[in-house]
Amino acid sequence: MAQEDNNVAQEQAQQPGFSIEKIYVKDVSLEIPHAPQIFTDRTQPQVSIELSNLAQQIEESVFEVAIKVTVTSKIAEKTVFLVEVTQAGIFQVRNVPAESMEMIVGITCPNILFPYLRESVSDLIVRAGFQPVLLNPINFEALFAQQKQQEAEQAGSVQ
Image (cartoon, rainbow, N blue to C red; front, top):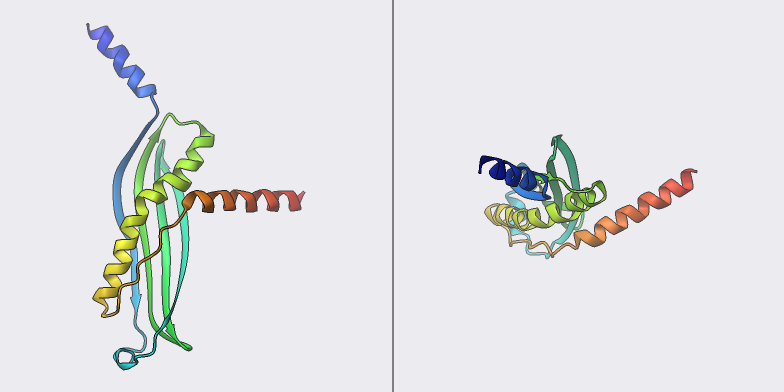
């Protein structure tokens, strides 16, 4: 019986596996350079958003994936606020082929992190005294494909 249990445990250890170990805010920054005067300006600000994602292996089959967003609100050339949030997670990915690993880290993990990032950004902006900025959904699969295409074009131009 013990041998059967050991065989079952070994089979399970060989199965592909994915788990979320931790989700956390890695870095937060808020700047309101023209406070308090900026709060009396009723002009509608222009909002710009920059997004990037990063991944690194921290142990065998354990990865840290992070999404960083910068939200800048301006009236003319005057910055209303600048918010930077890096939302991160630690994920364990076991027994997955290398070609699938890149997709998990570049698509699946950012999709899991994005709702947390969106909430952190909106909450921080509201707590700063402004109307919430809700980040639109991001198609990480399309971003991943675009990044792969750019890498292929760069590799082709280098040769």
